[in-house]
Image 1 (cartoon, rainbow, N blue to C red):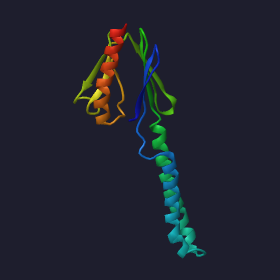
Image 2: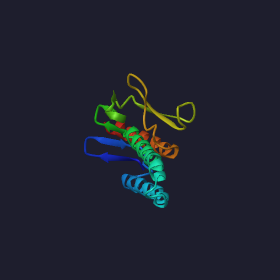
Image 3: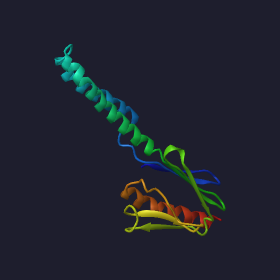
Image 4: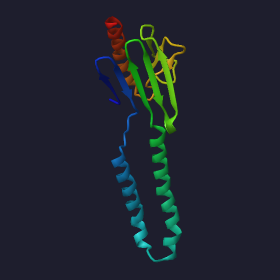
Length: 163
């Protein structure tokens, strides 16, 4: 699961991040393997003018794949942290390129709303109860959001019964 709960005596926290189907190690192997496989046909024309005609296009193809995958990694550098303390619920979202957004509310008034349809994604989760409603975990899969919503409700219920 691309989220985890951490619990101390006074603070409960939820950390969420996007799923990575291609880890960095796999990224290196993919780019290296692609470069090697593209270079195989070049061996037949090594030392001829055709080699120099093909080389820039092959380098451009590998560079394009590298750039696109690297851009995908940068765009998915999202971390959401939901902190539940005695009298405060705090959501911090660090988005791509370090953009930071924050939201706070009294945990006694926060509702976890799960929108089956009508949101940007199916099973869209929002937290309502502060100055505005905010989304949570829009980058998670539908199954993960279905599993997360009841966990959030349970954590808020347990917190409100404890205080």
